[in-house]
Image (cartoon, rainbow, N blue to C red; front, side):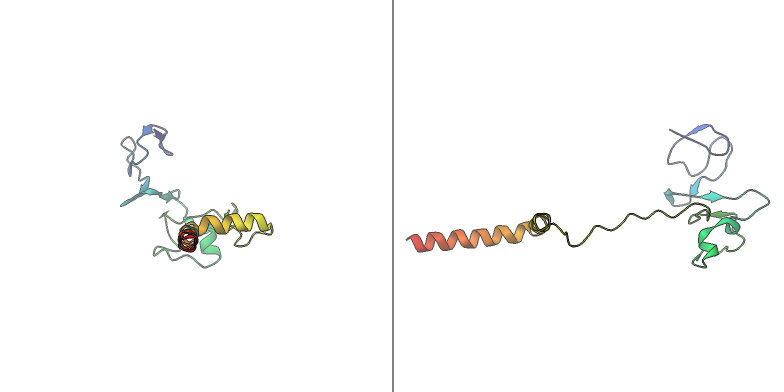
Length: 121
């Protein structure tokens, strides 16, 4: 169970609207996406990173009271670093290649096994 950020009552984690205070909690049709809401006398765009760098595509910009893509500009964006494509350790690189091309290795093994049986007869 989750708590409503407005009235602190227990609510269903998939609830779109709080059954107690009737505040909208999530984007309609997208229960997994949070819906950020501004106070009555301010707009979210004033504090949004995407508005500041002009990458926001939200139609209510710059007067949005609710938004699904809001990110507070005082908070840093955290990105997962991409996995390295090539390992500097040759043994790790070989293990990675073998795990990616397991099916190809199986086919090559079957071909080699077939050639060995054919030559022994």
